[in-house]
Length: 235
Image 1 (spheres, rainbow, N blue to C red):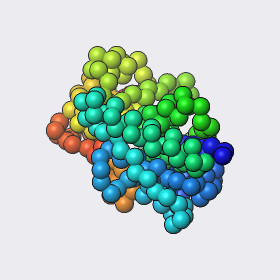
Image 2 (image 1 turned 90 degrees about the vertical axis):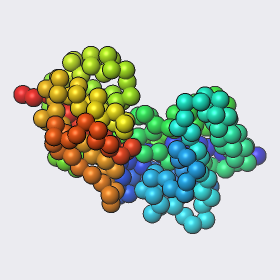
Image 3 (image 1 turned 120 degrees about the vertical axis):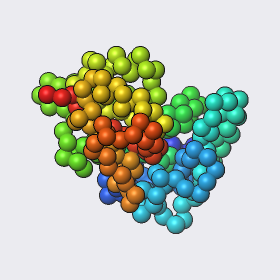
């Protein structure tokens, strides 16, 4: 029996119409759709975005990624995920893994990609629009111009590393802002980037939030998990 193929598909920042034609075709032809979740709940933002293109006949399999620090729990959960995926591929099923933004940028898809690649199965990765580029276009805010450089960094980075990186950049994309806003706000002030910064949560979704005055927000502001900041140095 011919083994199945894994497709890693980026569904973009939130608007279902921003998926590529190639992504839609792969979704429509899939035997199984994997929908990543951080815990066992009946919701997946990536699935909601791709849902208009998913056939009612396609099997939907939630895949859980534990957001805990106990590596024993994480390792056990991931082993279950790996076993489930490879069993389906052995059955000849073509599997689509949906991920927000682009699969190769801070994506849970990388865990799946590494395990399946190491096991020797066929893989095709289909890019999606990264959240920060979707936000930039949505807000008519150029990310870079002329010879400006760009920093992409998670707010979860060590403070010293974060501080040093901001000092060297003209423009910054700050991801994973959730629970780290106070630090981000302080460092953006320090490096004179907060006046030209925006934060968007759940971009392109019905409940999106846009914050254009980050300097006035309280330090204990608690942005949504799906939040991104674009900041530009004061001229």
